[in-house]
Every structure is written in C-alpha cells, then in structure tokens.
Length: 308
Image 1 (cartoon, rainbow, N blue to C red):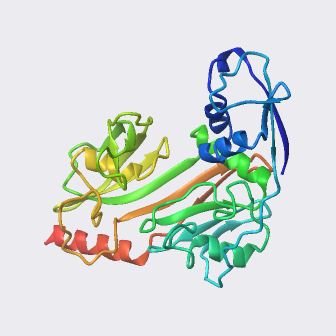
Image 2: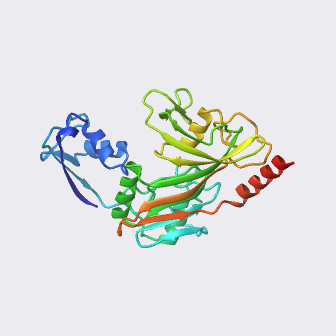
Image 3: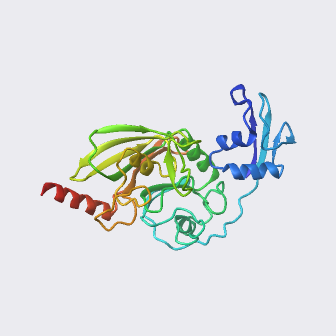
C-alpha cells in the first residue's frame, strides 16, 4: 500500500507515537499500529522507536503499509439494496439482522460477504482482511445507510470526514415516553460500561466526547418519533444517549428495561440520510434510505392508537 511520511509540528509535540498515528489515521486501529511499531515498520528520523516514544517538533515519521492480504472471508450472493454506487464508493441500505463485517460468531451472511460478491476485488484494504471496504458500521438490528469504499484513496477521504464530523448522518428512531421538548442536544461523553464490557455508558472514566441532536417528528400516546443527527459517531451513541435522558429506544433490550408490546427484532432505529463529499470530485452527495416496512407499519399502529 506504500510508504507514508509525516513531519511533526509544534502542536503535536510530546504525544506518544502510537497515539499520534492512531489519531492521524482513523481507519487503522491502535492495536494494528502498535503491532507495526513492534515489527519496526514505524521509524522516526530513520530509526525504529517504541510505542511510548514522545514525538518532537520537526521529527520525520515514516512507516510502510504492506499490500492487503486477500481476505479469507468468502463472497456470498446476498441481494443488496444499493442506494448509490460509482467506482469509488457504494452506499447500501442494510436490512435488520445483518452484521456489517465478520467477527466471532458471524463469519457468513454479513454485509462484507455480500460486498465481496458484488464488488469483487474492488474494495479498500486499509481495515484489513476482515473488513474490506468498511469505513464505518451500524448495529446488527439498526437498518439503513452504510457506505463502503472501493479503493484506499476513497477510504482515507471518508475516514477523514468521519473523524472531522463533516459527514451528514440523520437517523429516525422511536423511543419510549413522550418527549416534552421539540428539539434538544445531548452532549455527554460515552465509554465502555464499567461493569458490563458489552455495553457503553455515559459520563464514564475515559469516555469520549459524544454529541447527539434530536428533533421530535411525531408524538404518540406512549412513544415519540424522533430524528437524531450525529455530531460524533460513538458505539451505540443514539441508543445510549436517548436512554440517558429517560427515553430508551423501543425494542432495545440492551439499554431499555421497558418491555415492548410489539414483536420487534431489536431497537427501532434507522440510518435514513448519509451525506458526504465525494472522494474524487469533492461534490456533496446525499442519499436517503427508505424506511423498512416494519418501521412504517409500526408508526401507523402508533398513530391509530393515539387517534382512538
């Protein structure tokens, strides 16, 4: 994938080299960068360094990324609802129940398996053999827009926009209870739950900044339809933030303690709108994922119950 060079400026000084690189290249995990450092692939002023090295002004940082290894994950002929596609990116409307990329317990039937069949070898390799083309993800039971990249240049562009919070991401959600405010902003850091490592929580030690803007679209008898706009993109952000203000998402059995009277498969959350600057043209592209049938049907039931 080539060799990369960076020169340290004054505002970057005294930061650990592993932290510096993980912050600079959002698409590479910190553990992967630490592995590169241990293998001597990262050099400062021509010499290998340890992960604890503190960078200094005018340091010359270089590292080499090897060519991506062909993935062992097999292509699968799974139908895709394609919202937008060109030679750089593809945006699909992910259905409920589909995992975005392979992981323990989910090595088949994922969005990656489907993309490998549809795109062949035209997927970026930056995120490794398990996540070719994947630059962001949504939860298994969340539906809607997901963007994948077909080459490394596109991947780096979209990853940079995600890091700079310039990508438009609008979600629709149904939450428990009737919100009094028409609009609001939840600005509470999110991090790993202190006692349940499978969950996230607000205001925890080492939590990262998380901001969600919400707007009420409809009020029902016991529920509210809201539009949520992400300013940041933390794991389970909308689910955690809405729970933190006492309005967990309908169907969310992880963060919501209230039982649903409806037969639902996970949270009622849909990634409706995705907008980004095209990696090649620089023009703004915005796509909308139509609501899944279950979501539309559910809002009709709620509206009918409210009218009665």
